[in-house]
Length: 370
Image 1 (tube, rainbow, N blue to C red):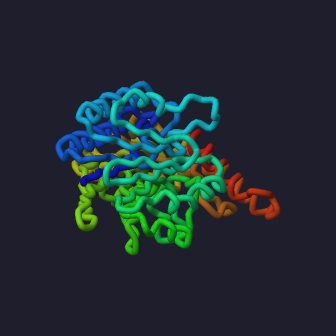
Image 2: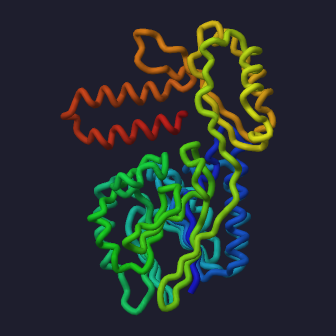
Image 3: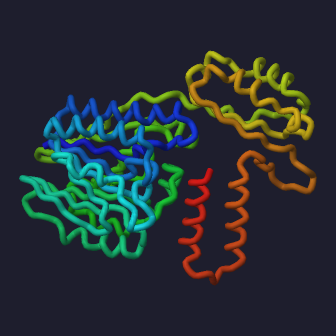
C-alpha cells in the first residue's frame, strides 16, 4: 500500500503580489502530477490547503482543476481543514464544500474526531477546532479509534511544545500538544501532521511533518521543500521527495548612515551587489540607519528599477537610532510596534484571564492585516 502525504500548501498566500503567488500554484501542480505518476492508493493533505477561508477565484480554480485529475484517476484523497481553511463563524460556508461532489474525496472540517476505514487501513482524522480545550478532549479519544489487523494512520495539524521545533514555522499555532501528550499516538503506524513548514519526523516515533510546498517567509530560506511517499509492507518505508524552489536571498542590513540621496544609494548598491546572483530570485533588504534627508528624498521607483530583474523584491526602511532610542524603528511596518506594545501591556496585567489565548488572537489578526 502506498500513501502520499503533503500539507501546508497555503494557496493564495501572497494576497498583494500575484507574481509570488504563482510559485505556490506551481509546486502544488507539481505534486499533483507526481501523484498521478506514482499512483498511490491514498493521498493525505494534513491542513492549510488555502491561506484564507475565503480563497480567491484563482486559488479555487487551481485546486479544482488539479483535484479533478485525482478524482478521475480513482485515487482516494483525504483532506483535513485547519485554521487557515476554517471560517471564524460557524454560519459561514466552509470552502471545502466545493469538494462534496468529487468522487473519492473525503474532507474533514467538522470540529470532531472521525475515522474512515478501507480494506487494510484505518484513517483517524482530527481537523481544526477553535477551542483548544475541546480539541484536546477529542485528541485524547484517538486510541479508541485504533483497529486491530489494519494499518492505522492518524491525521491532524498542531504545534508540539518542544523548543527544538519552534523555528520550523512562522505560523501561530492554535493548538499546542506536549511531548507527553503525544504518547497516546504511539500505537499508530503513521501520524501525518501539518503546521511546521520544515519536513521532519520525531526521531522516536512515526510522527511526521511533511512541511510546506513553498517558503512562506525568509526565515525558511534554507529549508528544502519536500513531501512524503509512504510504502507499507512488513514495515513502513518512507521516501522524501524533493521539489525545486526559487532562491531566497536576504541581503540583510544595508547601512545608509552616510547616504543623503537615493541616487547615491543606488551607486552604493551597484558597487556591493552582484545583480547576476539575484536575477529571478526572491530578495529582501533592510535599509538601516537612514537619516531624515534620505528618508524624505527616498525614491522608490529607482530602488525597484535596480532590483527589476528579481522575481520578487521587498524592503524595509529603518530610521537612524536616536540617543534616546534603544532600538531601530521599522517605519514601514508599524504592526510590529503595535504587537510589541500589546505584549508589554499584557505583561503588566498578569491576572488577565486567558491571556495566552488573547495574545494569540491579536497576533493572528495583526498577521492577517499585514
